Length: 187
Image (cartoon, rainbow, N blue to C red):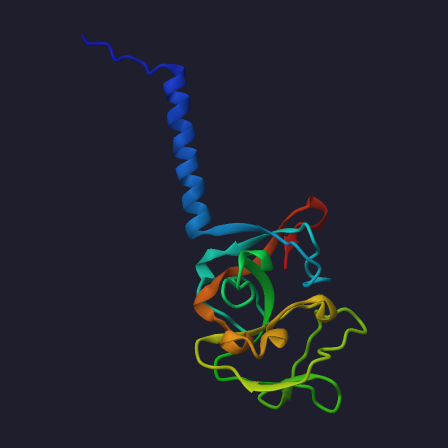
């Protein structure tokens, strides 16, 4: 009868750690990815320091009204000194939409219809910047909810890409706050 040798506890622990790291990497790449909110541009929905999860199953897609995390390199962050690589904003319009600011009542319009924005803090103007454009196919027009403290598509209309981000740059929908615990929950 041959006896099977048990692995040394250090070897067993090392194998477990490696397996956990591989599993965590797979979850981060294929399922969800955490991001820390760096600024007040998405208040009141998100505040600085919130940790959100981006749903990786939605990467490369954008739907009006979604809060998305996207890679702003070359669009929102031309150089490393301009800020982080990843940005979180709300999708206002997608390819084919005509987005304008503002109608006689002060609302942003999509294809001539006033955009309902219940996520804005009371008294927030939809935009101080006027614009009227058609979003090209495969792009999205994004705004921060805190319009007076957000660098977004409005501010980059004359930049490469006209301030509109390729939808393929979407890392995922921000669907949940996980930290701090007092703010934990779905968006």
